[in-house]
Image 1 (cartoon, one colour):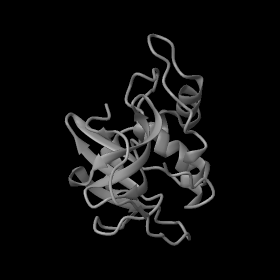
Image 2 (cartoon, rainbow, N blue to C red):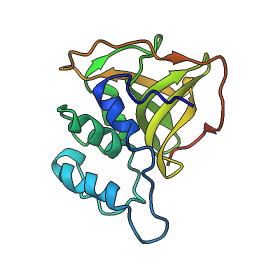
Image 3 (cartoon, rainbow, N blue to C red):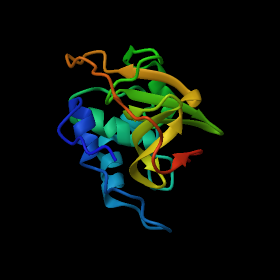
Length: 173
């Protein structure tokens, strides 16, 4: 839906390159996801990450930001760790590529803002239907919108959609 590969902040463009990445069902693991975990290591992630069946939305965001020179928060694997990281952009106006954090049953979810409607945020993220995808998430679940504190890139308003198109995520575990 949102094919803006060459727009948005550098980490957002980095993330869009990974839209084909997905978990491997069963006991096997995605070499791409496991490669991200190995490169970032337990010092960044806060855990020894050994299977793509473990929630990896925080891993994906840490990978994209670290690839562009930003230091992820401590225990970056935990989605809620991102809720206080960087600079607070508030929740009223949404910005393309901002780090958006959501509450969900059993924890949280983190991704990047691709767009929005009055009631939903269009999120580019990992571990959404076991893959890097874009999906709508209810805006009422949004707990934080963040921006890297050291970024010189100026936040630009996200694309506004008149209505949701496609699936609406209810649980990103």
